[in-house]
Amino acid sequence: MSTPTAAARPAPLPHDPARRRPTIGVGVDESVESSVALAWALDRAKRTGDAVRLVTVVEEEAGSMGAEYGREVTRGAAERMSEVARTVHAAAPDARLDIEIVHGPVAWALARAVTDGDLLVVGTPVGAVRDEAAPRVLGSRSVQIAAAARCTVAVVPPLLGDERHGVVVGVETPADVPALLDLGIREARLLGEPLLLVHCAPRDDTAADGVLAAVEHALRERSDDVEISARRLFRSPVDGLVELARHASLLVMGRSRAPELNPLGTTCHRVLSQAPAPVLIADAGRPGAGSRDAGGR
Image (cartoon, rainbow, N blue to C red):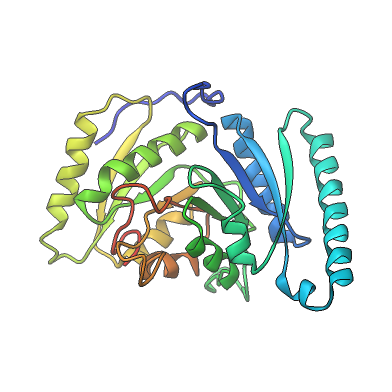
């Protein structure tokens, strides 16, 4: 199932004065992974027109070593952030930036530096990759940050490559379709690329037909300038989504339906541990955005 799309690069979304524009918060430190996340966030800001908030964390251990040491660490962080902001402005003079220095455990502090309607972008290391066949292991800290945040989170690995195209959305139940379809269409429109909704399930899963029927119904109700298709894969959600993400610009997932037990869900957590593309995790307040298999369990 598909509808035609224009291939032109989209302009920034029009301003809606009745709606507060979201901020793109990006975790900044001195790592290469942070630089990759910042570059991804700035590229997105060019498309959306959103402001970018550079957030760095002074960990709580600095304060435990004495007030003066804590102030010294904070001053050093402020100087580094000012230098990052100057570098960004030199390369992107139109970028709207602000700086925030927060204190405390990294995941908790970053998650609270943005509001529910914002986007939080974090980088993550590749881990021990010996060759192309070896699995990628994303940093546990990025998983902790994604679990702690209620807003939409983008987890961006390095080594993105140039041969990427399309937005992949994992859908597990009919209830997931409206919210994740809306999010997927927005992302595909921003990139000017096609959208693929995918449901991964074993061959004997009788619920799969209901999921695809919900997708077809939702698409009949829409008229979008985005090419949209849907697939069913007879694979585990983790294997199927990771494989599709190898050649995608973005993978979109929902969160757990039982956040009090596991905020991300087992599948989302496992996909993040090896995802070869940026992963956008729907905000915790998005109705129907959680899922047990395609987005979390």
